Length: 401
Length: 185
Image (tube, rainbow over all chains, first blue to last red; front, side, top):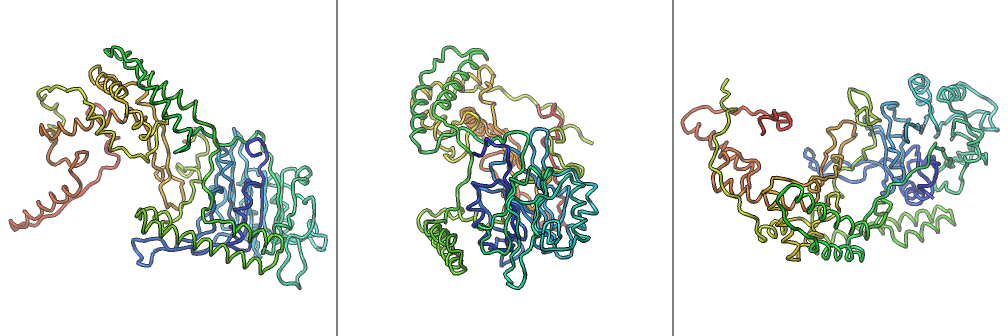
């Protein structure tokens, strides 16, 4: 159960820029994983937002979002789409998930830090292209990096160390292992070894290029798996693992009374009987005022404590998703055919269109709250997932602020 | 430099502060939004409106409000607050404090009494002509448009007299927090 564990469940997958499939992953994985490390995320124009300088509106670009996940990505520079990003479950909110561009600011490398007590856990998501850009960068900067608890991703490096079909162990692989050692990491062989990349081109043989590194690989081995079932329409097999923290992860909870609920009615009734029953007496000194104000506050808090209940903070789900989408997705999951994937895409598109058309009709004709539409047309909000900087230094502790 | 602005203001004639009436309380309550978030006591305006359907409850609150003014004391419950830090929308990155907007949520009962006091002050301010005609901020029924109108009027007056008019505008950042506290008092 989330909230009672020390494990951060990590999922790492090269989704090959498949927008719809990443959307499906976000929707289906939030119960099973805490961190999704995505390589080659889709990055496309989603819609236009009103602009003060451009009549056509400014493009809103990005990857899919989901309310259960914190969307973390380094904003693109020079129109170069990001190659790595992370989705962090809102369950981890207490750990203050932070994107650490102060440690590594690179298109192909994403560093996520989690904070628990005095401990900092650093996790790295890497996409290394054919030119080994990420490896070269890490080699030059590794001495400035702290130690890491996890590194994983699509390294595009072949070596006999992790792939029995390969005979060589060349420069890039050697450098990668050296970098890992400098970060206090070792390569972890999954508990079910095998290829992680199965090209759509049938002439290419399957190979191992997606890797995971842990601090102590022996014990991590049992927790690290290849998961061919969730491959979907992509050509990479994803890897799953977990990173163990020192203490239990606390969930974010608070007390609440739902609006319009029976509990709220009972709460209001208690207030309606409690407040008029307060004995006012004389009010001639500050102490008198404090006494009455305190009596009032006591009535309010007693009623609140009696009727409120503890809830986990979650956000609303994707409201357009309907039964047909679920059905079509499960059909694809059993058949694993391209046609059923395309059928699923059509179903989702139709469901979205139906939902948004009815929303627009509601707003245009029935309630006339035109401003409610603004949420859809504004530029996307990035979550506040980076530390505040002061004099170029990131402030991760209360004292730093 | 002319420092006469810092001189103590002449004391005006003291006026009575009449006790609040139930109508003042209900008037102040009607204008409160049912959608805004409550303070640390979780009492929203909807809840408070329900409580104050009872005459007994209205009387208790009026007694309390009048006593606060008479005694000159503001109880702690009215000062309790939650500070919420909201990231300003649509920023590419949130690495400087300026990209956040803190808001404070106070308890609604205290806010209701504050609204009643504010209504009285606004009324007296105009009735007894206590604000400078050039002050536009913080006065009901006056807005930026009045300031703009006043400025264009001055410019056009200049033109009508055949003069060249120009405007020097300056903005004092963080004006209120940088004031000497002794002057504010």
